[in-house]
Length: 219
Image (cartoon, rainbow, N blue to C red):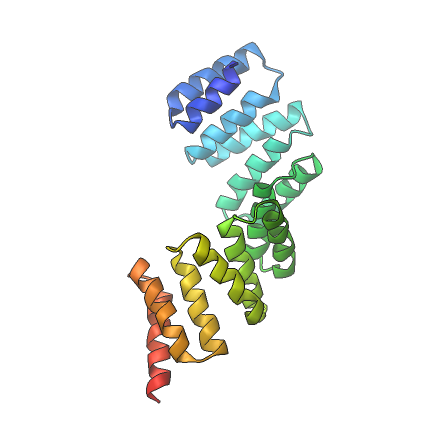
C-alpha cells in the first residue's frame, strides 16, 4: 500500500491528522502527481474547508487537465455551497474526462433537480438507477421529479419501492400521502402522513398534510 492508499484508508477511518501527514509526504515526494492533491482536496472538503479544497483540486487539474476525480470533488464542494451552475460544469467536465459511475450521475441529477431542470434531472437519476437499482435516494428524487411534473401515477411506484428499500424514509411516506390525496382522496393519504410523523415527529409537511386531510374528511 503506497502513501496515497494509506492516506485514503486513514481518511475513511476518520483519522484526518494522519491522512494530512501522509498526503504532505506524498506531495513532497511526488510534486507532479495530481493524486495526492485530489486526496488532500477530499480531506479538506471533509473538514468543510471549501476554499482550500477547491485550491487543491485546481492544482491537480493544472497538473492533469483530465483528472476526472478533481472535477468531481470540486463539483461536490460547489454543490454543497449551493453553487449549482458551477457544480454542474464540474460534473460535466468529470464525465467528459472519463468518470461514468452511479455517484456522478446521482449528483448530476441532484444538481439539475436543485436548478429546477426536472427532465434533465430525471435522465441523470435514471442512469444512476440503471447502474444501481438499489440506490434509494436516486429513486426518491426520481419519484419527486415525476410528482412535480404531475406524473403522479408514475411517481407512486417509485416511492413504494423507496419505502420497501428503507422503511424509515419519512419523506417518501409523506410524498405517498400527497400522491394518494391527489389520486384517491384524504382517507387513503392519512396513514402515510401518520407513518412519516411516527418516524420524524417534527415533519412539518406531514403534520400539515394530515391536518388538511382530516379537514377534508370532516367537510
